[in-house]
Length: 262
Image (cartoon, rainbow, N blue to C red; front, side, top):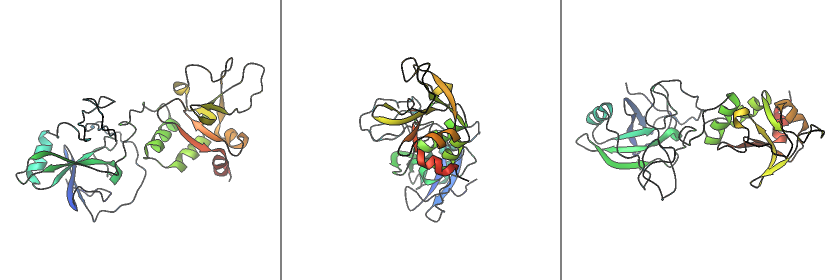
C-alpha cells in the first residue's frame, strides 16, 4: 500500500518511492522533519547498498553486500517480481533504493534514500540510476560490527548520522566503560593518550571493543562510570570512544560535565 515517506528528496519533482516488495509514495509535498531513526527488528531486509565517493572500485563493494559500477549504481537494477509489478503499475516514474537500516513498515527520511532507478514509459526498470547526494550510509552498510551493547549501538548511529548526539552523551553518562590503567603500583587516574594523531582519554564500550594489547606497557584495563569521566576529565580534553574501531566518537569533557549537571 503506498504511503508517504518522511522527506523531500525525489529523483524528479514528484515520484514514487519503493523498495522491491513495497511501494512508497514520495513527492515535494512530503514533510521534511528529521527524527533519529531506530533500528528495525523486521526479519525482512532489502539488499544492502554500499556508497562511496571513490571512482576506483572493484567489482563488488567493500563489505561484499552489493556489486557496484564505477558511477555508484547498484548492479544490476532490481529485478524481483514485486519490483517489476511496481514498475508496470507506475510507468514513467522512479523506483527508489532504500538503505537496509529501514524496515518494511518504517517511514524513510531523505538521508535513507540511496537513489532511484528510472522506470520507462513501458513500465520497465531501466539501467538509468540517479543517486541522492544527501544519502547517508547506515552502520550496516558502512560495515560496522554488530553492536555489543546499547552505548556501542548509539555511538555507531551518531557516527553514521542516524542518531542524536545528545542521546549518546546521556547514555555515556549512565554507562560503565573500560579505560586504560598504568602499570601496577601507579595511581588509578584517567590518563590522556595519543593514537594516530588523536589525543584524549580513550574509553571502550565493552570487552569486544578493547585493543589486543594494553595502551601502556605493563598496564591493563579497569571499569569507569560515565559520571567519573564527567567529574575527573580535565577541560580541553576529549573523551574518545572506541578509538580502534570503525565507529570512533569523541565528546569534549566539558560537554559531558555540563550534561551531568542537574
